[in-house]
Length: 231
Image: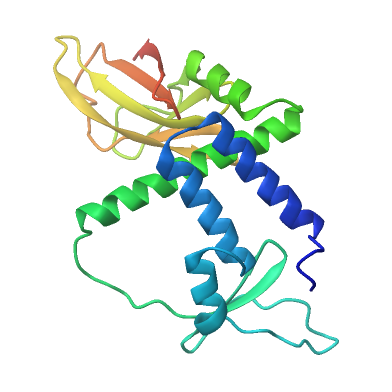
């Protein structure tokens, strides 16, 4: 492809990077996202150039093959931004992450969060700034705690309904008895079938009365919403 002709999906991706960099001035974030997209595009950037020379390959498909995904031997097949990529399978490293690796992982987590704001902004015909600020200023809400299936036995389920203007990041449950002594606590898991969060009891509390169940929902910025119910 000639360099003076930019495909629409590449133009969109580059515009997204410029948009994100404009509202998030942290030096690491703009650099990470820009370099990542350049690397995936196979052009520009030190990392992209290196992969383009040594770790990438072009594929000529038979008529019956559209895309390849997964791994075969030591090769990995994947698709990024409309391009098919062949790379060597990474080695499994069973050792603790270094401080620099932990920082890099956090940078990628932040990049993923901002990319999610950008995607929502495009859906709403708004800006990433507006979506992020609204999420930052709006607390999640726990709307209901369903204890109908909780009979204080191990394995009983507690269902929690929670909502947020952007996304509920997680829900935790804490149970105490009538003397405020902790009975159990833990994280609930999202149940796609019911659209609610499900906590499974791990302690037999059938001998206790007056239990108080507290559900706490959190969002991406760390805002929380709380609701309690008794059993």
